[in-house]
Image (cartoon, rainbow, N blue to C red):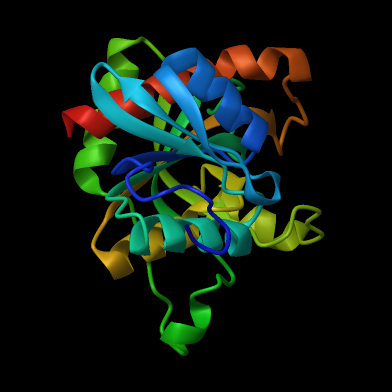
Length: 235
């Protein structure tokens, strides 16, 4: 048990999927895992452990933003021995060729700042995904005939962004999409010698202003979860 996670020793699997929304963690666990059981509900941040094709899996919410994810990822790795952490979440597309419901695999994650920025000081650390996870996730997406894009994303530390000039430069430089957690997850994985990947579903588009209706989001996210599970145990 830690400050933020109430699971007992042995109740967290080495493979952890991390959606931002705790209710999405509940949905994913009940939909994709066998015999899921709730192992954490401290502060309403739900975590569930079960099995997928005989493999132990924990699905644990991260909350919104890098500071929140940093708390849970640190404790999952340091105190519970998590070895593979895969973020599953929504993202806003930033390129014309990326469509709603497409899946993005984040090879790199740029940011203005992260909770780890103070460690590096003047260094602009370049956090990236684990290559074998990335490769396996891409193969899983192709096998499922899911439109998939691999490249750099932007992890923002604000949701209500008012920097159109920065967005213009990211579009110009090929950044695929924006979300709020992956850069810190990749940094922590590098620090602790773990594997990490962000598998993201496009829920809205910054250029076209399209967005998925809320009722369509959950069904669209199923591909993302299955890709993440396949990658975790085939890489």
